[in-house]
Length: 190
Image 1 (cartoon, helix red, strand yellow):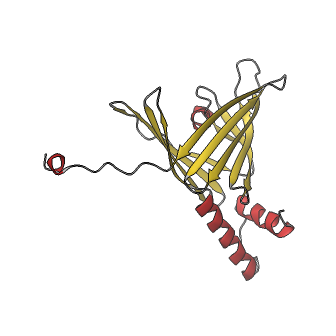
Image 2: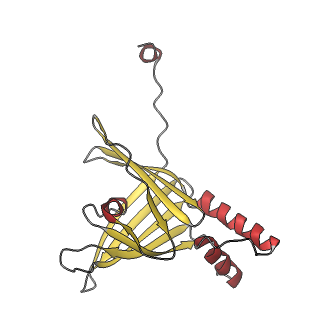
Image 3: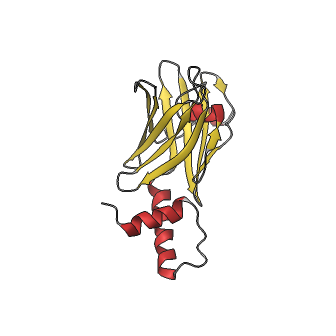
């Protein structure tokens, strides 16, 4: 169960509140909490889509109250240049556009994030916001949960909630990237 101390510390970390006037022991605690977020809820992950023969690399980083997501997609004989980094900060609506739709598994849709929740005990981040919709001008409720499993895997579950309560869900499991292929001596001499 989260204590008031942990909840307060998470709020300071999440909103990037200045620490100049905080007591020394609290600053040390906040640094520890940020270190935990960086070690438990960030990293480089990989997903391979067998039917489409496409690979996706996803890098997740956290710094000073801001999430940064960078991804690149490659397929048979093609390399799509790295997309711009998607940044999410607490404290207001973040309009991510089509890049947000692609990041959160709803290609062709625009995503805006209003808030996020960090749960260190369960090793997950949950993002809340709006997904664009052809049927509803102000969009539909959106939620995406990133669950980190033993620092080796990350499961993303994104959901859009319709007017009638119907949920459209998209899921993807990411793993640590495969090690680079080692070249044989004959290939390295070419």
